[in-house]
Image 1 (cartoon, helix red, strand yellow):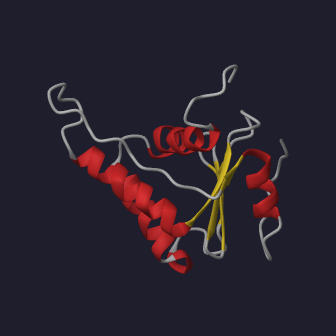
Image 2 (tube, helix red, strand yellow):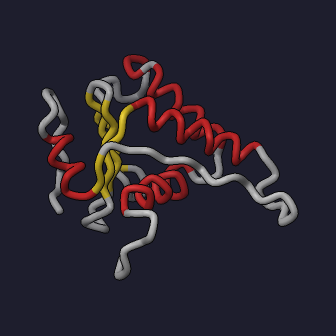
Length: 136
């Protein structure tokens, strides 16, 4: 990215992950909701989901790191609850009539702990973290 987005790089990363890895699939959203609610029964019970289309997802304890090695500053750390809230909103968006120009969708509210290098440092400092496989 050449320009710093108004909403911040953390929000850009969450939006990019939703668009690139979950795309417009409520099934994908439901899979991730289930992953967060019952990590032990997910395909990666240790929380090392690795890379999807372009985004890493690492879960340690109550924390989720989402990042990409393609845009150095575009990393984010959030709690499971924060990501579940985003996913529930995204699911509601997908289930609505988001293509109706007379009824535009509501914005998705995104909260997170940190973005960029700070997100990497916080995640890598967690006990038993998977360590982000790249650095800003």
